[in-house]
Length: 165
Length: 243
Image (cartoon, rainbow over all chains, first blue to last red):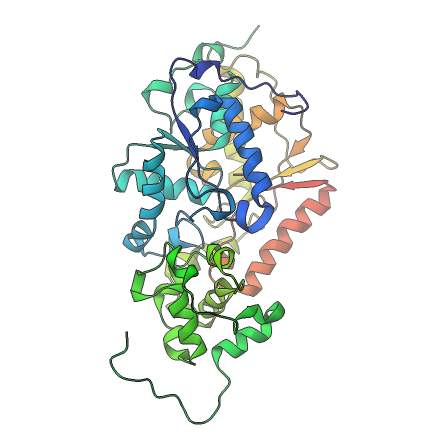
């Protein structure tokens, strides 16, 4: 992005004004690269959705709460304990009022997705790559499983046309 | 809390906490606890199984080895290290939890975690879903063919395997190729638009490592070595661990 190799635009969200928040993965942020990578993620996300449509959680970055998907919890068989654990994360997300949670970690993705269903939070959960591709106008029709109806067609004419001859 | 005073053994013994201290840099600061509770107040696992990080550490400090090494709470702590971040003495409680996991007999550890570790040992793919390298290649090629024939601008989209000298070695969580292959596509397209020089590998492509969660050091290391050697064998400059 900084080198201008990829162009992200938030124009698609100018009128929609859909709110986004982010889940800072513990392993990526607190345990490895620290606040700088958390800042990078926000830089990318804001470019994708518009600065005014990003709502941060509190606390965040290195001080963020673990969602409960890590450490093998998802495969441990302790499902209700895992969902109890995730209540603090769920409340944090609800507080932002965001419709979408960006989860740039596979375990976070599975856990936050499950939390939304379990607590009937009504929020969706997507990888960063989904929103980046959406903002580049290259997100294909089959790549929108985790988007709700509002976004299932956004910009789709750009990428569903048959290939050029 | 306890109804009656705890009777500590008269004979000094080497406790679980002592043993863990010996393994950690600066003894993990395990003897520096001020009992302030900052760890527990910000821990999502507080209250599960009647346990919390401070209680766990205090019990270990009191030599209650039996309780500390048998509570299922160690599988509910994700070792996220927020307690260390909050602690004024930087006490490494997550390592105490990890060592407690290790002390569990293999057959008593949560089956799902152990099975996911075992599955990764089946093939050089290191997939916790037991997927092989052939499965991966097949899924990627099928998905790529669809993109080429259905999406404008991507008729010549390339995805390579084991390409020597590529700058980036990309791995992928098994769930994508095996359960939701379309989720791989946005990443391919972003890499393509950025003009990134990247490749997948047929060995060590699966990003996850459940042997670490299982507290199985030997197999955890095996998996990391398979992955690192796969990257080195291709001479790639960067190992990209995807979302």
